[in-house]
Image (spheres, helix red, strand yellow):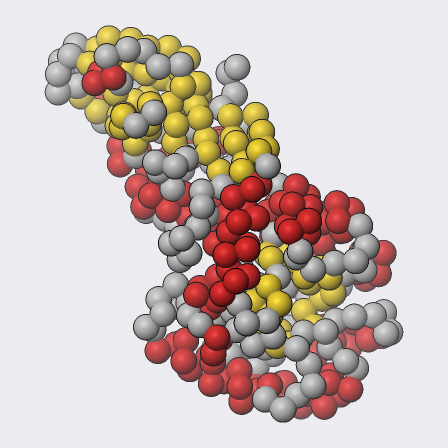
Length: 344
């Protein structure tokens, strides 16, 4: 097979949710935006629903409609972007719950879909989405009278538990919501790990479900095996790949594998990346190109059929470090050319 094989362990996905659920003091939802962080939102959603998830979160109404088609009626599907102009039909038909970010969105929702469920997103300092304190104060009583399903905010620095921004946002969230008759949510993965003070009525983990930091105890969910197309000998002093950026320091055996930046394997990881043949590391040499990557397999002593980039020996965050990015980007960039297999 020419295409690389992306194996998705749905059992690990469920175990990661169960582990975070065991830490949570209230309900534990699941974020499946960006096509389930690259693994497939319908498949991830169904696996998590079977495990007991009743509240899902996605970025847009289009994502919500796809998830609803996979899950059927029953679970709540919250939309982080709220109720945008043009979303009304999807909101109604797919029974989606927008997290309203402004007075304008609130007016649009109650006028277009009177009586339909909604939530509220508040800005506690991230300055990205949500109503700021003065705006919320002006409409709070009217909003609460309409019975929001959830009031939420989002932490900016939860990957750094000691950052003072966490305590600041927690205090702001209390100030904006204490005493209100509505369920509350502040914590994603990082907030869940910071303890019960951040949990409120619902946590909503995302990247930790898929094996990413800051959930250090997460089981790896994805593995990526790249087929070897050709293996060749190069002599000391010869170069490999575009730009002659790698020159062989010794006689070497070089494997070319199927996969590149068109498959989401970020070009910047270049020579900082490592592929694996079972337990043996094989350093990437030369540039990552659109469809191909080259690696030094000299020390293997044989020519491999495949080399692995992601798996038990190398997490998404390790690959991200090589590329100078974060695990989120590695996961959500996983390409469409892979042959995908799912394991329960």
